[in-house]
Every structure is written in C-alpha cells, then in structure tokens.
Image (tube, rainbow over all chains, first blue to last red; front, side, top):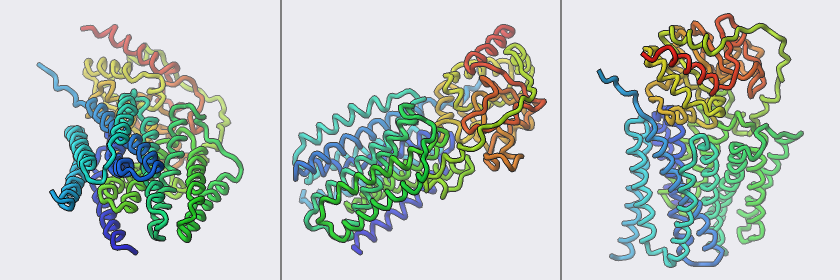
Length: 98
Length: 464
C-alpha cells in the first residue's frame, strides 16, 4: 500500500470528523444553502481538471479535461451565486418603531 | 522562484483554501454570519484556481480559458433559477460535479498507461464507478424534479435483482481491470455499466422521496471528489470531498429519520416501495368545513396561530399570499409562527427558503422539535398544502404505513384548520384522521385563492 494512500486516508478521516462537527451545528433553516455551498466547495475539482486540460498531453485528455473544467467551474460559479441569493433573503423580524 | 518553491507556494495556497472552506461551513451555523461563509468560500476557491493557473503544470491556456468561460456561461443562469427550482438545480449540480470527477479520473487512467499500478487502478476504478453512477442518478433525479420524467416510482418485477446484477457487473469489470490494467477496452465498458446502474438506482424512486435521494447523491458526489483526491494525491480534493460527503451523509440521515426509513433501506435504493401500499378504501365520514369569512373570524380572535406549510403551498405559488396573511394577523396583534417539517419541500430546508423569499422573518420559522412543544398552547394551527406530515395516525395507529414517522402535532392545537382541494389522500395514498376530528375545520379550495379570501376578510374589517 503506497505511503501517499495512508497520508491521504489520515486527511480524509480527519476532514470527515471536522465536517460532521461543523455541519451538525448548521441550523435546519439553512439546509438548502448548506447543500448548494458544499456543492460549490466540492467544485474545487476544477483545479485538477485545469491541470488535465492544460498540461497538453493527448487530444483525449485535453477533451476530457476541458469538459471537466466547464462542468466543475459552472458548479463553482452557480453554487456560490445561488447560495448568496438564498442567504440574502433570510431576515429577522423588524422591531416595531414606536 | 525555483520550481520547488513555486510548487510549495501552490500547496500552501490550497491549504489556505481548505481552511477557508471549513470556516465557511462554520459560519453557516447561523443566518447572521452565513453570508461571510459564502465570501470565505469564494476567496478560498478563487485563490486555489489562480494558484493552479499560475502553476508550471499548465502549459496550454487556450482551452482552459475557453472551458472556464463556458463554465461561467452555464453556471450563472443556474445560479439565477427561481427558488422553487432550487431542488432540480441542486440535482443537476451533483451531476456536473460527478461528471467532472469521473472525467478527470478517466483522463488520469489514460495518461498513466501503460504503467498503471494495481493499487492505482483500484482507486481509479472505484472513483470512476461512483462518479458515473452519481452522474446518471442525479440526472434522473433532476428530470423527476423538473417533471420531465414521471414522478411516480417506476418499478418492475425483480428490479432490485437487476440493479444489483448491474452493479455486480461493474465491480467484476473493475476487478478484471485491476488484474490487467492494460486491458483498455474494458474501461469504457465499466463506465457504461456504472452509468446504467445510476439510472436504475434512482428511476424506481418516487417524487416524495426526493429529499432523501438528493442528499444521498450529494454524499456520493462528495465521495467521488474525495476519491479523486486519493487518485491524484491531492489533499485539497480529499478535504473538500470529505466535507461535501459528510454534509450529504448527515442530511440523508436527517431525511431518513424524518420519514422513518432505515438508512440501510435507503442505501439499497429500496425506498419508494412504501408508496405502493393502500390506495385508501375510504368510507364517507362527516367533516366540518368553513368559508373564508368564518376562518378569518376565528383567526382574528386567536392570540396564537401556527401555520404549517407543505409543498402544496409552493405548488399553488401561495407563499406571497401567506406572507400577506402573516402581516394582516401580526398587525392585529396575533402571534404567528410557522412549523416546518424536515421533509416539507423537495429538498432539505427548501420550505424555509421559499418562506424567506416571501419576506417572512426567519425567527418565525420553527423546526419540528421546537414547534411541537407549542401546539398545546396554540389557538389555531393552519395547515396549508401539507398532508402526511400532519397525520396523527403516524403517532396513534400501529397499522398505518407511516406509523412511527415524526409529525407536526397539529391535532394538539385548540382548533386545526386545513386548506385542501378535496379529501383525496396525498402522495402516500394514506387517509388522514385529522380531517375528521371535531376540532378540525376543512377549508376546501385552492391554497392561494383561499388564503387571499382570508386576507381580504381580515383587511376588510381591520383598516384602523
């Protein structure tokens, strides 16, 4: 088993625990924005796709990379945009003016 | 800067991005700080993208830039969809995320040929299988939510056996590839079989179960990104995928509990079958009904009212009328709150977004546990477009298919009012004893029109 695998497994397990603890505290009010935000964060796959598309090896890898960049970057842009639109709508009740 | 130093700088930037991602989720714990979370996430993502573009590995920019532009052109409209369309948009974004992960994994396989290690092959195969099944599964889910595909569960005899055989075939091909990674013709076959399995997994699931399905697909999409991180030895992907995966997992568990389904039941895709039960052989029982005038009079004399909205309210586009009702009652000094069931909507938290969009303050939106403590002191519980989540049979009738499902205890309020088109049973085809109680008033009609009628009555008397 490669050493990289073990160190990645450590990171995965620790990140999953952090994720559980942080996400458990997210108010049920915000579960929809939570899903769209994690979706946008998950779109960080775009960095791997950029390398595949940009390292210019074979036509096949460039095509696969380009489609992957477009798909993940659309998630990133759209995910942040819609999350912010949703969160802007959540307002507290106004305290009555005398 | 030396190439090594530049590479280290990129990795440090990724580390900053990861820290910002975790903070972003932490800030989401309260609506007051949540928007900082989006900003934090944006900064982290932007740093990571810029660092990658500046890195030595990117040689040819033409196609990368074109792809980024294409992604933005697709992404912006998907970020501007109406709030009622957020569930299908979310399903589609799971599909896009899974597509990207599967494509990068595939490209990595072809790039490594002919020297693919067995361990590396196993990682790639697992990653590509999960990415592919999430892609088609999410597309089917998006199609059902958009109502392009039928929302009814589509089932056939021996379905689970067929699905499991297809999954078995994908795994068998993956094993063959691990043994002989140079067998390139097997790779596309494995992808095709995994794509087929994803479609088979979600097709039998009905519209009412979409909150669970969409959460589960969220979890799979995260898992595929994390696995890609293992393939590429990229910690930033491992962390982002683990965060996304655990978020989807937690939401799946919450949705399962809210529908009283076991997690195993969901994992094996057997859900949706409950709906096949009991097409309600109902006898005619007497109900009490009321007009908008009568309903308005009762609401006006109440001191505490809880509104229970369901997806029917959103379908009727009644949320803005409901806000007018909220305003009219609040003006008269009535304490109005909203009780939100976790599955009231087409995805977790959807109902809160729809009500927030209608300008209802979020401190008036209470979750199930909180609001259930308040029903006994409530004068009127007003149910708008919700059915099964208010069905007392879930609490009282052991023979009911929904027995054990947590519900909103509307029947504990002094008076229950239910706006409904007719007495037809809802999604699950289960009769609701709430409607026949002495304390219940049925308000027959379209949700939007009926609420408008009540608002008119309240306004008519109360322009003081």
